[in-house]
Length: 67
Image (cartoon, rainbow, N blue to C red; front, top):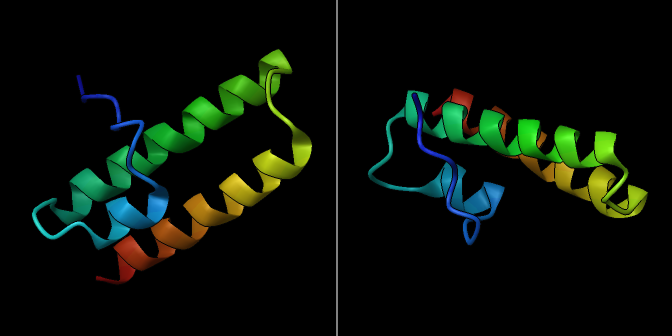
């Protein structure tokens, strides 16, 4: 089982992290995406914030895959 992402880390923090492996970065970002989707499903998140956060996560995933 993977550890949950640090709630203080942004997607950008994860993708730029120096000691995490590529797989660890992608897993943490995937976990962030899952949590966001779950919040959206419960209706506990503002749509504009969800869109901005999802864009940020997707950009960080692209960066992590590239490195």
